[in-house]
Image 1 (tube, helix red, strand yellow):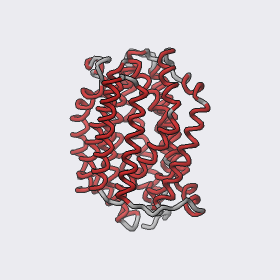
Image 2 (cartoon, helix red, strand yellow):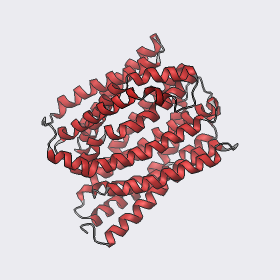
Image 3 (cartoon, one colour):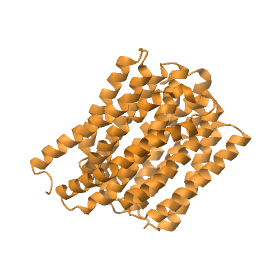
Image 4 (tube, helix red, strand yellow):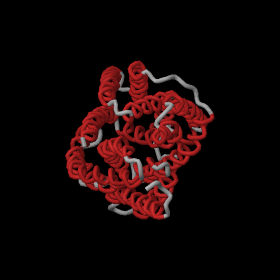
Length: 399
């Protein structure tokens, strides 16, 4: 429980700082809100494989630099793909000419953005998985103090969306230097064994993330057809929803530390259930408290706060699906069964996509776009639980 509280405090700090960062973008204009939302959806797709190294490390827990190199290599590849296909990507969304031009400019920086972002994210996660939570907190402070300071300067003197994204890249670079100096990892290049592990664990996990995020991109694309105002409302509410995930992510991060203490599947399962029962009331309470805090911070002056009600309530119900999802996802990762994640995510995102498509042109489309977050993740958790149970009964685990 103490690991959860410690990580939760760090994650709440992160989420508040991220909301302030989002507010700078949202204060510029409604176009900036729409473009930022579209860019982050694109990033969520391509970073799926740019994080392949750290996905593998979650299972192997050794040879850190070997797996960080895979983040860098795949990040460069994803950046090249985005730059090559920029004109096609920009036209995926139903954007105005001004919005398309703004998005096109941001995509010019994507290769640098994804490489530094995934390298920083990988090192952050390695520190956390090693249980070095004091260094983790200090590293977060270095990153977010740099980010908010640079954001403030860029906004006050330029109000330029591109420079706000450059501020993020520079802040990642500062934090990478700080973490590597303090962590003192053994420098290693990838070898045949680490490549085999990436193929065995990382590719399935990255494929699951990619498939899930492609459907989330389609989720955003469908939402963009509701018109600028409704898409703006969706973007703000969904960004709050994504920020709220930092609470359940803290829970999952604590599980990733505690669960491997169990030597068998049954011991790991019991560790998960015990942690779940202890954390549930606190997570639910924090979810609804911070829903309104994040909304007030991040909505920006270009979209009145009252426009987001009552839709934000339905978006925030996603926690009831995320909670069991994170529990059983951790068990899949600890057992090296990433294919189960792929099966569950496929079912969940298809259900999300079909429901949104069905209700797109109805008066209550925004309500539906909110509640599908719960339906998607709860469906995944059911699949994970059923498949894990069947594998355990067949003796596919050390029990």
